[in-house]
Amino acid sequence: MDVHGWSRWVVALVGAALVTAGVSAQPRRFVNVATGGTAGVYFPLGSALARLWTERIPGVQATAQATGASVANVRLLQRGEVEVALAQNDIVYYAFNGVEMFSRDPQTRLRGMAMLYPETIQIVTLRQKNINSVADLAGKRVAVGAPGSGTEVNARQILRLYDIGYAQTRQTHGLARTVQADFLSFAEAADQLKDGVIDAAFLTAGVPTAAVQDIAATRDLKIVPVPEVAANRLRERYPYYTPVVIPPNTYRGQTEAVPTVAVMAMLVTRSDLAEDLVYELTKTMWENVVVLHQAHARGRDVRLESARAGMPIPLHAGALRYYRERGIR
Image (cartoon, rainbow, N blue to C red):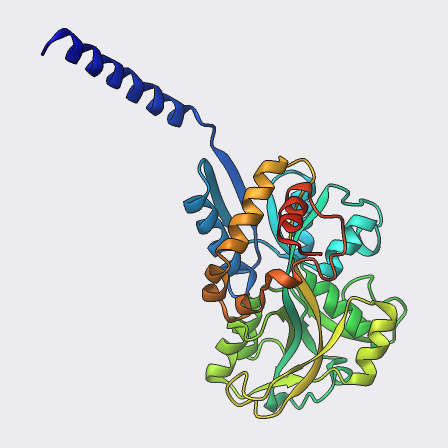
């Protein structure tokens, strides 16, 4: 090899070493994604997002975590234990504004990333239980959601609408009628309803919900309605509820449409996350949204044009930058 060839080889070698050093020196950015129980919708969607961000954003290592869902998730965000979370819009509103269960600890670090899809409140029982209305739950053993979950808040608010409280806690609020409340995850509630341990269960999630499908596969399932009149009364107290209808045949043996109410799922982050990082997370999600469409049936309801509709808290600056680029108001 002549001198010129040797020089070129040395330059190429040094250049390759510098590139390799540059790549290895790039700091890893860890993004923990708080989801919900494994039998709900948050977990498959959050897992899909974590895989997408890890694969498509250089330097990002994202991991989905199963959690107690909405209430627990916003507290994890506030404490800085996770970077992104899925949560119900009503819970996020309560947290940011320091009302309801957050009256003593407002979660001011929360920032919005995207509105996602409707989450339907499903009150599930078995036909043999002869429970035909929310009022019939009085005196029964009812799964009201995991501790710290949005489902539990929904259950408490809907039961209170019918003057029903929890028997074993101070949450009776002087109400004469009560339920024996069990604080169970979706999977636990499904198992205990099938086994006859409980009489009914509240589940707030996109439909169809895996836990409800699990019940319907082996038992004669029934979904308790929340009629329009009751839904309107509920909205007077809590404006984030929306009347919806569970279509017939959503679940095995459910041949009739069932009126109920829903809240909205959303993606939340922290105010202290770097603007560029949140911009990349938001951009990558929307440019590959088909990944969410494939992860769960409710993922098909996630649309860019409605990403800001009904956002209950300020957007993170990184997300806002992306939406402005796309003309999304």
